[in-house]
Length: 260
Image 1 (tube, rainbow, N blue to C red):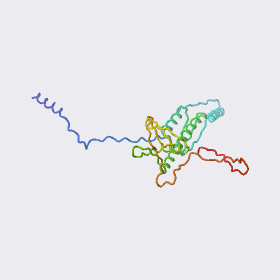
Image 2: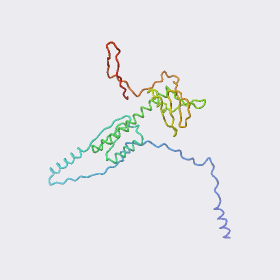
Image 3: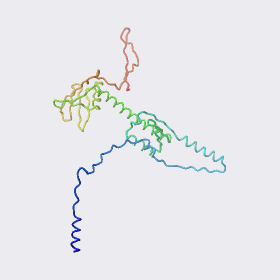
């Protein structure tokens, strides 16, 4: 009887659990968007080695003098620089990581006192190195922001397309801006790479040739409601001098082109 009981108990353990209803199954969590790195928080967590200086002497006046000499020496070696820029919040995470790593390696304190302001303090030479690197990142951020504004203006006025059989496919804004720049600089051709494929655009014939020699037509048209296809040029014109070659002749202007 005991054997039969054990046998029936064994069978009960082998019972397969009922399948879950699909509607009650747990849905996989959606991927969350990673938050942008906070430069202020990252720099705040950078630690530096600490040096304690102990001043000993026979009288308090001598100790005070020695302490003042040490303070003056440390102060003379330190430099503090404030950098203010509206493009500071536009820095990429890779730029911020580079600033934090440089702050750690050179033992330079970088403090974000405001969204558009950072203070760099440390040994004069090292602090200058970090400040220059931050300014380089800010210059790149400024150029990227300016390019995005140009792409936005171009999107509202001009359409660059490439033929795909009987239809036209609009090119992306970054490439369209490069083509627009090349056109206004009166360049005859421009080369670019997309998805590991290299293309050459002939702006005289308005044709695009890929790496295997296939030729397609490109087209540039003004969009509806746009009065002009011109965009903000990256160059400004400065009249630097006036030269009169002969009496009564028209003046010849020397014009220099400078990047805006």
